[in-house]
Image 1 (tube, rainbow, N blue to C red):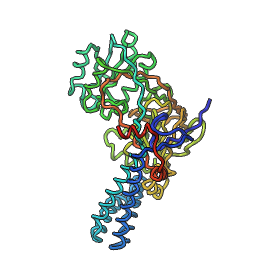
Image 2 (cartoon, one colour):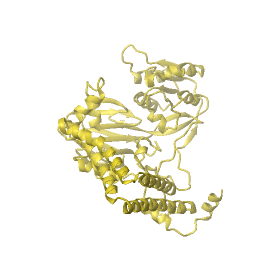
Image 3 (cartoon, rainbow, N blue to C red):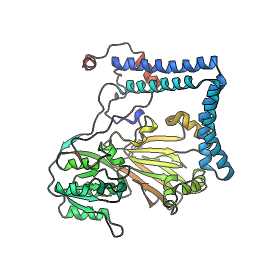
Length: 471
């Protein structure tokens, strides 16, 4: 049965989190009311500083500064989407525009007013998000008691993450805890999935991986299929999967605590065709660039050489994206399908997922056709028509070519079209240390209408909330 695509709630929060159910009356605590009022006060103060500064010194300078932001974004688009003289003129504008704005502000004597207004704006956003987050803790994934493993098997890539396996002595520490360790030393390409499958056939009751997210995803598929727990060791370069599991990315040796004092988390797995992914699958310009043979030797040069044709549609496949049976994008330049949605509260949160057990795919698509849309993207980000964000249980990417490049957890592969992405809810048991940094609560998107309602609420909060506030 088809399911209708769902828009991601503001902030990217999971169902059953801190927000109120649709149609239920909002409960606003005293702390939220005052934080909302403080956010409006800080925002108003920032505007007043600019207005007074403009009235006393130079309105023209303020308007030039605002225009400068749009010029920077438009110049960046022109630089990426064109070649030759136009590209380099855009590059000069990209550097000169912010420098020119600073010079104009300095000449008008507005630097301290701009700095003060920026600080007040940051304070307004910080307090506003605190008010929207509310006083209740975010819902966390369920933790189940772990059955002590008898025959753990751990695959380690000594080259991953710049040699973290050797630097942190992970192989020796895992062996001392009773694990059988297999190093991916070659020669040639090692079939990680086959190695994990053979270990499970031989009686392994836990599969661990110290390597990149692509390697983690291959083993995750085997562990899920055998319903045995998987242990993630943050020995890759970026460790996005480990980040969203709340593991320590600075010291991968702490992940081995799962062998002695661990708990099990049930999480979803993404499926693209018959291949699993733990983070995301990317389509469009990025995947096309990474697929190029020249990319490995000259990443920047290859990217700049290929992007103009890819961004303007003169090269690469024409993509059509369907989510739960509905066409949501026709001709996007980039599409990202993620195992659970990324946070959408701000750009800083786009690399994080607060939950991995919501049972939905996250979909982010970008379609920009001119510099004006690029400038608008800077001003209104999530509300821009150039960006599509939603959740779905099935996403199909079709194209006018028989095969298209896809980046799956950082690895580029060619796949036949149409490409079908689905979610397998609660398919994987992940063994994690009981004591770990954890995942910070998602940052809610700024919602000024909701903040206004909170600020103007004068009814008393329920007794339970008042008791919580006193505590």
